[in-house]
Length: 298
Length: 269
Image 1: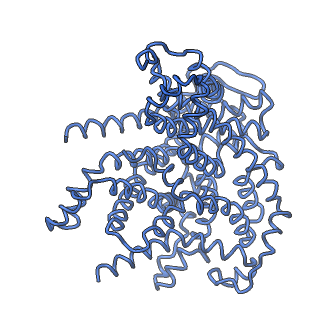
Image 2: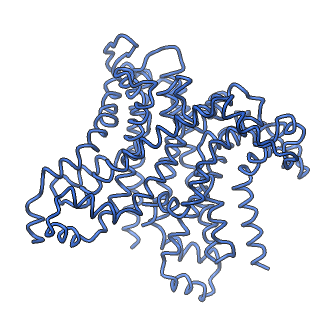
């Protein structure tokens, strides 16, 4: 009975189950992706399309703003995962030691990820406000008035300030995930490390990290992907300014497609196509890198 | 002693994580005049009337309703369509199964730019631009990979004996899905419903590209617009923020465990 169910597949049912999903996928994911690649070789004006070959790609290679945006996005995507996962790991370790009120902490720390970037962005625009923002208010209260900054108004500090916001948002999330990973470990292992009386740092690095390595790597990749896509937060807080210091690829594509009055959708499509390839290869490289290394160690 | 130090650090970090929201909450019931006197004071008089004011005078009722329609519509369709595909991937061992699954799953890492310009063109072409239906369709496509991913991993754990038993009892393939798979998968379904609801409730990029009509704006767009128009009216913006936050907080209050499960799904292996 079981064998026959494997051998004879009910193709009609399979088709019926997959049809809705693939209709949606084809119409609103696959086709738009292909169309973007097609656009990238054309000049696309509201009423006319003209084939321009690789012209857009040549222009993109010379486009300093684009490379600026790429640098900013990569900086963000490389700094954030380390900061978020690092902080998350330390917090998870602290909480693993069974602190009273654990449930409450867990819920409180998870809250920021549930808020939209729009809400978070507006709140942080206020926090970074020069005159009455919490950041400067705190500095003044601590007698460090000399360190008061314009934060997101200063081209040098704007990007780090935004990175700080995402770190604030996502550390709690990473902590909760890592906590789940820690709790799924056989408790003897962790306790054995405690009995061996090795230091806290040594325990973390030699016992815990190797054990939860798959989770750690997943979180790093997840955070990396998220930052490569980032748009909302920048759009609400700085719109890429001041002086393009926080321009990301997402905001640049949006500006070129819908804000600049060139009306050409071809060039922004070229940016999107190139970026698509970059993101995909970056993610594939990361997963490949992490996978081989893991195999080497075990 | 170490315990106390630990607790102090935890409390500090908690204040750091939740403080900004508490701050906005206090500002949402204070007038802008009161706020500008002292931005960090506790509300003396609770100005609840600011909520109906924002709701009716600043069109938050319209934004809220639009968001609700789009999110509920998209989540309802997503759950059924996603569950059907996930059930199929988990249940039938046919050729190209893994390939098709990978095709859908890989869309998780696509940067939105790769589709958004063409989606704009396509929706304009089919008169779905500036329409809540158009946005809903796009949202379904955007969340489909994650939904299929979460549900597939759950369906795959249902023992196949159950299906064989159902088949012997004379259930059709569709009945097996509807009467066996879905009820068992209820916890996973709940997770995806809650997760998708919150993610779409907060969605901004697709909305800002595909909706420009004042009457069609969803909440994130409405808030951004209000922020741009009334830059100085901090108190009223805070009220608007609270209107957007409250539904999320309510969902979170009731389903925090489910939600954390959903958000962390896949990250733990």
